[in-house]
Length: 170
Image (cartoon, rainbow, N blue to C red; front, side, top):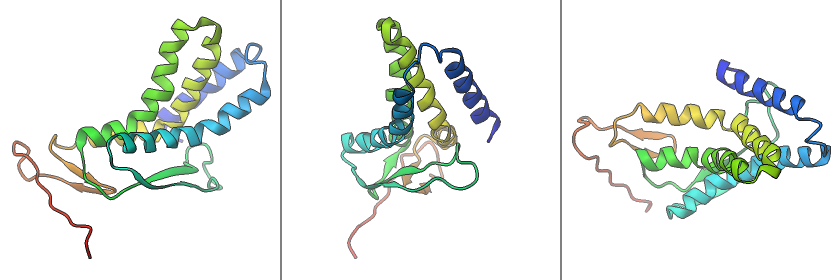
């Protein structure tokens, strides 16, 4: 576990331990913990659908034997379409915004549910660590870079627009 992921996980554990009396429903804690990962991945799929790109599928697999906490056990496979840098970054960070930032804002408004909303936000934050690292990585590319799944199309001249032509025909 990297330093950042370990720190986030420690904050999450301290929060749960400190507010365990207020988080008095063990069943609800387990339900949120296990249902948040599929909801997180559905947020990635929702973003792809909003941009009209869609997904080939959402896949679930058992966690790896090592590093069970940090390795994903669900992921989406987007359709093979080109994303610009902004779209790619937002698609990666969309679950973080929807399931971490939004609950934190709502916890200020709905104080009766603040403990649970913060729990959801921290739980999703631990799941979003790889997304945050990926977004930071993408932000290092020139502004007119294009992305096609795992392929990065980098311009020779960062001041000129990128143009890419591709065909799905065989």
